[in-house]
Amino acid sequence: MTPPNEEAEIEKSSAPLVEHLIELRTRLMWAIGGFFIAFLACFAYAKELFNLLVIPFKWAVGWAGLDAKHVELIYTAPQEFFFTQVKIAMFGGVVIAFPLIATQIYKFVAPGLYKNEKGAFLPFLIASPILFLMGGALVYFFFTPMVMWFFLAMQQVGPDEEVQISLLPKVSEYLSLIMTLIFSFGLVFQLPVITTLLARVGMVTSDGLREKRKWAIVIAFIVAAVLTPPDPLSQLGLALPTILLYEVSILTARMVERQRAAALAQNESGAEVAKAGE
Image (tube, rainbow, N blue to C red; front, side, top):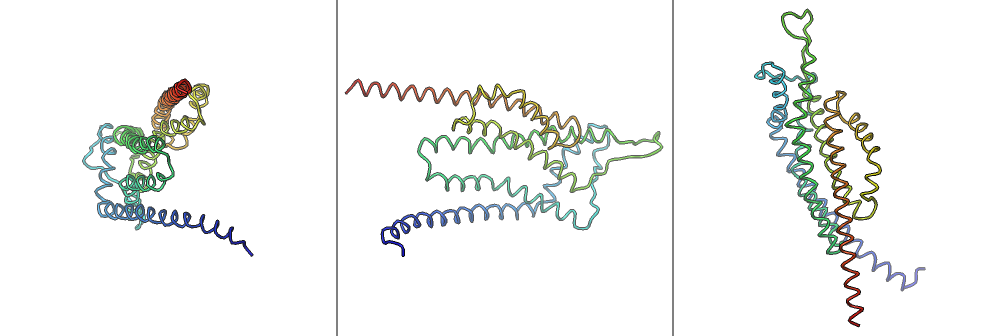
């Protein structure tokens, strides 16, 4: 039989736990509801969104000297284009609902943070989606046209060719390609945010990052080879920004260290003044 004092302790600790679970349920409902509404809106305009994603392909066709007015994609299974539209809606739903989802995560975590921790966390909450969008914009306006131009250059067309070999991409494969590139670049652009957070908690230092620069370059090319299509343009296009962002991460880690040293010096001087006043 449990003693009365232990029962009181259990009841005292279970009450906050129940409140946290209720709070978690509320935040999840808001996040899922926001995603579902954004998903429905994107699904209603899925064809228009897909046409928007095809624009870089049209640019590549123009770069290849072909007629960009008649860009054609196909689907070979009856359900293929439907599921492609579902993927577009999910992708757009996550992008549109991300500010709401991030806000709900912050509201759930914020009560357990100190005031200075809240102030340190908010800039990263703002910087993360901005950096992701920068990576996605780089893919949309530059790397997708470059990759598609590379593949179009392999075509064997024209009256002088005995065998006509032309690119006729499937809608699902084109969407998978551009989504993979966007997610890859978007995640890579989070490198300064991740390293700055790790530097704040003391898990990495700027000197340590400098020492591991050679390994970081090798890993950047390996990751680029895994995440991108097997062509040198897209692999270089992901590896080079990754290396550049790694250098930016070293600078941000150094800034964090300087801020920490300044705060420590200020606290020590304050303590000395207080001791002198005694």
